[in-house]
Image 1 (cartoon, rainbow, N blue to C red):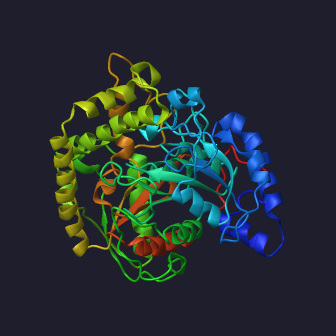
Image 2 (cartoon, rainbow, N blue to C red):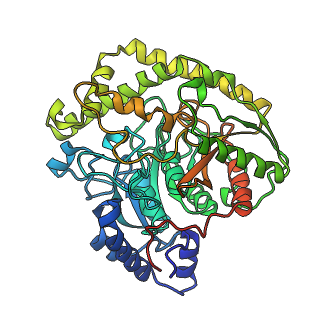
Length: 476
């Protein structure tokens, strides 16, 4: 089997009996063993468990899969969230999360868990606990974060698809860095159960993949059957997401934005060129593209208010793990940046947190009003090309916040849509002269994943990326 085959095609091989689940899993294990020493994408191999798994008869029956070591818990496996604190205690999850159970029901076979920065904070995957994951397009560069381990595993051909989640860009950033498809769905489209609200609804769960059809099929399956007690509800879809791939989106009005919101960073010329090239492709497909974006995105209060919520989430995370393990997390147990963010979160008042949530809701109303006149917003996914390893860093005593400051260009175009709850997708439409992937982001109105999937499939056909291979790629 060609290691570049997408997950849908792999499942077709099993259904047609051209391959067995055991053969797919054995081949994936061989690829992980061959490449992981160089890429450090998979930090918890689950090979024995995978070989003993009888996969469910779902749409992805027998397809090997990796799970990010953050958010989505897998019963009886290590769950460390990039933390030395949990690693050193050998912490293991007691149960599958709702999403892990849905992945199993879809037929996926878990072959490993992937690396993530501590608590998913940074847009690079270089935790002290497990070391840096590397980008298969250039092993001197980051695969992004916080789903960088999954991005590296999928881009290198270890597996065709992998779990990812996104609280400020953590699906879309690794997709951009690794030349993959990364969809952040509408808030509440995919349940976080058994957890409830997390940081005011910033976080969503899904995958990074090689094809639009894989992303659509996974979204279709895992967005069904949410358990009772959901804190939010996404707008009801019109029809199955799998029906959107190849469907005519009509002639759309699209705004183009190449300057980061609020002027908080400068956009690298390669990133601007990627978005402008995508605009030309969209015009060639019959859409209208004009320079325009929601003015509310430039509100200077956005970053400070976002950080109130984000730092509260870090503080709450450390409190949770202190309670859950019965051992108090201390400054010496975590990276300097994590502790500094937590201290800021603990120092914020409850009134400040509620105010930040209210601010985000007001901003969302103002931003979403723009979609009354436009169908999509087109931007670079990031304002900078993939970072060299070691350039974002973990911070030191003299300035523990330095990594966040250096990270701003990488999340400048993505984080705002976690606050508004809108769906956004990163597509691998451009490569730099250095042969590094440069992602392009499309953003739709609340609940309009259907429109994103239609246009993404159009672009996938017009500017195909399936045959591009990074230098570090698994043999067939």
